[in-house]
Length: 171
Image: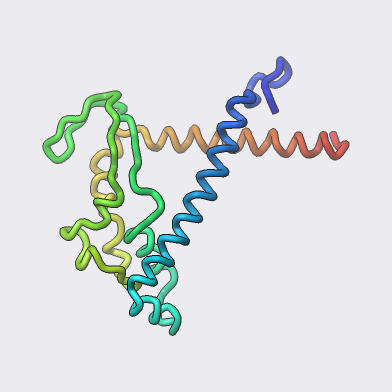
């Protein structure tokens, strides 16, 4: 799984460890925090808990509302790939841009009763960050980062399959 003359594209040991750490903490921490935050939100909003218990809730809407209300990711950081202006603020190429999901998702201009948990909140009301993401999409390199990460995961998966085959005595 590490680099060799026969496999120059293989992951280095450091890349492999970083990928495994990212997958472990990214998957575990976000899932654990999402569940814990959702349970706490239900305990603080007993009428929503009752609606869920009585099966009066569309679970897809409920999951989206839990993400909006108190999702596990509070901030997204990107690096501007070119200069641009957003809402009167000049952003320069190479500058870090912090998207504050927790603040945007409580925006009273975007959400009626933004401070309340409403498991039946309409889908159209979702994600206040959509405005910011659409406005800065061309200037931010999030798409390339996502593509690079997917390629890294695909390489890691291929190397893991090969290692399992070798360990099992296969080709």
